[in-house]
Image (tube, rainbow, N blue to C red; front, side):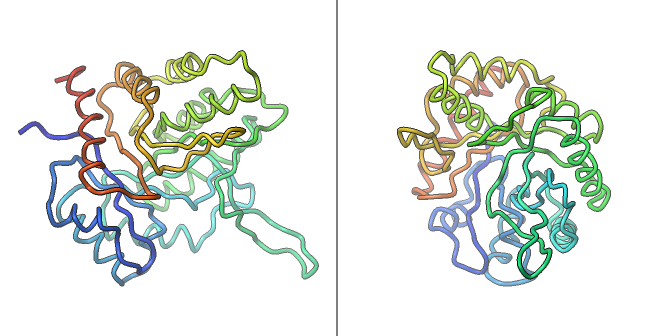
Amino acid sequence: MRKVRAGIFLNAAGNASVSPAAAAGLQRQPAIGFLEVHSENFFGDGGAARQVLEQGRALYPVSLHGVGLSLGSAAGIDPWHLERLHRLVNRIQPARVSDHACFARGAWRGPQGPAMVHAADLLPVPFSDEALAVMVANVQQVQKKLGRSIAVENLSAYVVWVGDTMDEPAFLMALARRTGCSLLVDVNNLYVNALNQQLRDAGVDVLQTCRDWLDAIPPQAVGEIHLAGHTHCGDIVIDDHGSTVHEDVWALYDHAMQRFGAAPTLVEWDTDIPALDLLLAQARRADGIAHTLYG
């Protein structure tokens, strides 16, 4: 049987029960390429969530995908967070470790004095030399601690900075050159950003904007690809990972695979999680595109 390249997201939060789809997946052991989890959900040393991850790791390669390192924060990396990630990496020995090109934590001067605060969201950084220097230092710190390179994902951003001195592909490529990290290209994020740009400027060609972005990234820089669903709310498009992959995103994925080669691909679905068969159908579609192109 041909090995499936695509993976699915294993949903578990804290010590709560896993989703029915995740439980079914561990029981049925379908032919998927890997499992991916949010690192922070498994920082505890025990509990139901860690047990599920250990079960999954015994069956499949695991990719640890973080949402809390805040690689673009001028306040630096949270030592506690990095230490917990280090312990999890040592325990699980994942196939890949990744996080986002964003910031989420910073110093706040409140009435009680300075304190570190967390935005509980993934916020975009300026595409500037100063922001690049910050992210380079933080990525280097993380990679030194983990003893491995990481992958950094492009963000779905709902605000933009004034005064950027480079575009996003140039920023990410400079980061990769200076740190040795790879890139995690989220095709749905590109599409969401282009749709939101079109809402601000009706003249934007959404698909061409995304293709130009993909064509600006050298194939050797890409370590993984993400696909997901999104929701159009009228005045904004939200990257919510709660539906099937849009047909335009599939078309862009085909373009990305032709550009980058058969990169490991994750179908993200971590809200309103459906039955396992629908998740597997999305993974098989991704794998079918890779098989058509590369056999």
